[in-house]
Length: 294
Length: 277
Image 1 (cartoon, each protein chain N blue to C red):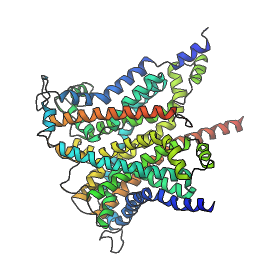
Image 2: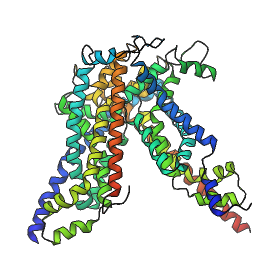
Image 3: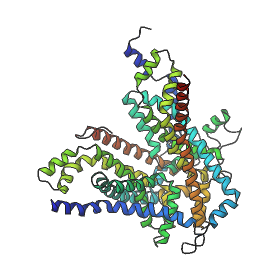
Image 4: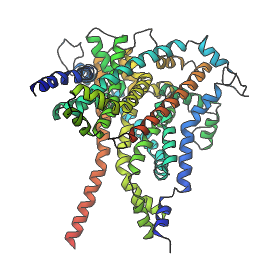
């Protein structure tokens, strides 16, 4: 018994050690260092100060850039969910064989290098391509123009690369909705549309919220998309952050901007996740009020 | 009105034509750009101009004159090393998490792993570079290796842990009560049952590491170009016929790997002691 315990005491740290060391060195310590550097504008050894944050607040450009980034990511996340919703619902009602096949097919672009995806969108959005003709037809772009090198192209790319993830998340939520519920509603006279509106939509709302959060956070950190496709007016906070590290060589300011971006996306995600519970609370409140009145 | 309950259920479950059309449209959106690249890789014009004229010369160029081959091989080497190590360390970590971890320790480990895949890689890559500069590694192959390892470990750990949790621990206990020591029992009982999930984790780690542009962007030594970095510098030049050929090959390989993952998933579900994921 003691020998076994000794063996366990010896093997336990060995099992954990490599992974824990890598995670500590490359994830935990870097994030802590990021916070520290943001307070150390004169190098890590020097006195701590708020100078980087002061500079960030004093220049309205950065605030505007942060808002533009959150706005772009938010719009892209909403468009992604709007495009993904109906396909996810259709998938969740298909027979297992067809469903699994389509899910597998959808994984392909998700696991393909996103630089290749950016390149393919770059080719598709080129001025002479048929896709642009279609965009002009539905009024997405002016006559003779290409949306390449505009902020719209960034949004198109963000939607394109996050569509598979959104479909997976929505699908896994919708899959749990029992067909018997729909059948019951149907036999009580609910039509197709009202079943979607009163059963499917509320029941898949949590999946919608987690899907929005899951695509929104990486979208906020986008930088290659806007750099290659976004053109001169399409720069986002991510571009400025990358420049601080590579060209401007100001790690302290880059760290402060990174924290602004991280906290901004997290705060907005938190707000979105709160919408559901708050609505629920308001509704239950009204119900109890009604009961009391009765 | 006289429809049977079963008929009603079937009607309620049926996919409406509108929803099916939206699904088709969505698939088209996802695959038209890739299909265009694949078609253009067989087009003779170096600018992607029509009319279409079939050729294999871009594939030939890819393996002879193209400067894409070197970066591709480098990316393959790095990713293979990272994926194999992630598989080893990740499986060890998963076993620790499932069998040995205290609640607090396990929670901390999970939070660390989750941070590695939820914090945008732009920010994480930048933070890694700060630390690498501070400890003197700077931009180097070692830094790339460590950075990619950190971003791939979570996938392996979470996939293997999910499988471990669905394993019947009684099998292990039975082996132990019959006299096997923990190592033997792990190697002879748990490891074979875990193998499909370990392979799945390795393949996903390989793909994530191969495609992780941002970590490579911040940690690659100047002058060393992995494939994503090479594409990044070339893409501003414009249309690249040999990149079309390479993209076609990469998409096909991805399809192959996904098919393998799917097969593993199926066998995974059919194994004794395990529930379908």
